[in-house]
Length: 248
Image 1 (cartoon, one colour):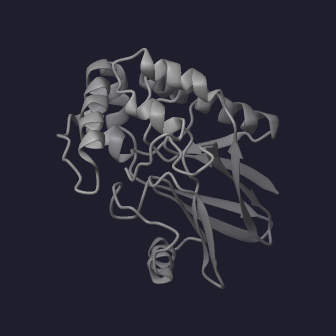
Image 2 (cartoon, rainbow, N blue to C red; image 1 turned 120 degrees about the vertical axis):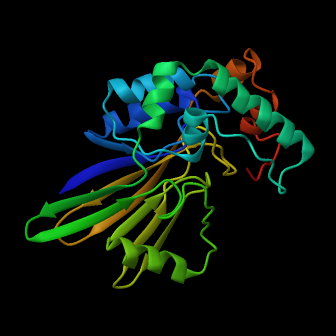
């Protein structure tokens, strides 16, 4: 039996990231993978990137990582309120101005997908890691999507499980004879009611893959203070306190 940890969407939230890493260490899990979106919305983007680099954690390029790395213009989204649109522009500009040149280069070189293969006994397991979907790192796939979408992803990737992030909402779906589709949620900007930091533990043996979504508390007020003392809009501090709803 082996265990791996998969997490996503840290979004510059170092206190949440440290809490997740600590929980993974307590569980004795050595292998860790990140699905991207290291930056934006909390002020420790550089520190998060450098921790990923120093720990040699394989990481994908999320849509926010790509935007910061290549200075891609921000396009307003019709689903956002004017308040959120304004806050989003300011928060992303904060990252563009503050992420170091070396860290932007690191983001620019991240892979788009990662395919893992494990052999346990006589069984080979294929694990497909994406930020949001096979063809895009900016596609929103929720638990409510038609099952065919996830089955097609499993078949196209020829995998036993597809693990994604991006939506900041965790879920697990199992398809008999096909495999699993799992969203590991968000470390640093959960949209779930509890606002807990979320990640995934995969336990793999010769007979099965078992996905467990883990949600843990972290010093959220430390993150709130960090946002309030930075140039990032207080909108995101209020969001973490669950004082505002968001569909970002």
